Image (cartoon, rainbow, N blue to C red; front, side):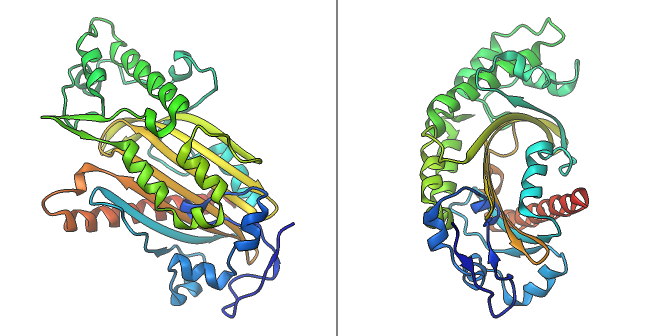
Length: 345
């Protein structure tokens, strides 16, 4: 069903029936004849991603190499990475599906699936440590940047009694359920803004919309998936599988509630994974990543694109903040890819 991708002059890909995978911004795998016909050869793909030819040797040795991803505004930190992993695309996808990020992201402390008809019970594994400073701060939260909450959510917290030992966790679980329900029903339009006080807001809806619209490779080669991702909850393309889950992750040494929507597409040609953090508890506003896996050498070429939006890199000194934040992001991506290599051995 898929065309064969010819071997490029640089020897990057073997001549074979290819399943594709285009890193974080393109991760997808599904039987779409349209992308089979339009998918570039290996040389064209490398050129489109901006991977420099001098980095190919490093890539073949298992090093992580980076390519530029244009940022859409001053609040965005965007980065792209590629790595060769000695495992077939299907094996990598199966690993991600079964293990998630728990085994390769050491900052994730807990995670749970959110089923279609989820209730508060789906979030019972998430919570603050009883009597902790974080729990007390949450119950006393006011508009601003300490917590990512809407005006209505701040008001609900003010009416919450702190008498019960688990009051903070119970209140947060209700917020997570309501935010998941709103996104599940209305997609990006259902994401409430974060009230920063003094009449200012952060808008994760607009940020994630920009991140998707700027995914030019996704739009060009996977138009059906692109439209679905942008206009969710429109129907998923045939062969796509979605999962929702909550995550508790340490960010800046604080526990952070995160809601994730993941879509995976798989077939003989390769694997594509799209992941959207449509709610995060603090420190950054939203995140979207794409992971694609293509058959390569004796394993897979993994392409990983990460887009994070945060108020912390905007405003005065933005260039320096972006430089520091970008370096930190690349360090995190390198760590996760190397952890994945170890886990897949």
